[in-house]
Picture 1 (tube, helix red, strand yellow):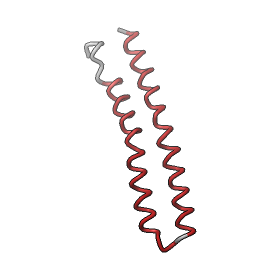
Picture 2 (cartoon, helix red, strand yellow; picture 1 turned 135 degrees about the vertical axis):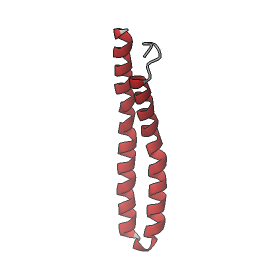
Picture 3 (cartoon, helix red, strand yellow; picture 1 turned 180 degrees about the vertical axis):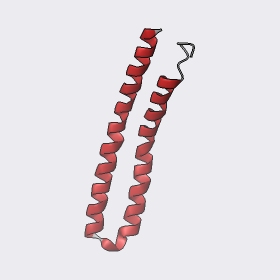
Picture 4 (cartoon, helix red, strand yellow; picture 1 turned 45 degrees about the vertical axis):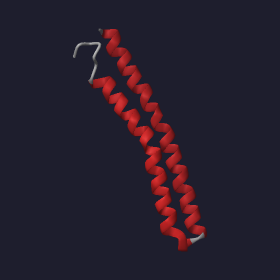
Length: 81
């Protein structure tokens, strides 16, 4: 049972590596959005709206990884807990 718990903890940690991608993508999108607003201030509302929609879609990968890691840590069917 100790091996199963250790493997679950390792899998949960590895699944949280998936949080790196959304962080980089959202930072890049925010930077490009700020650049676009600086060039065309009149279109700020449309640019910010598109940026927020894109960031919400990008964040789903991180949320799925968080759910998987929480399931691996707290809902362990192989350990009988």
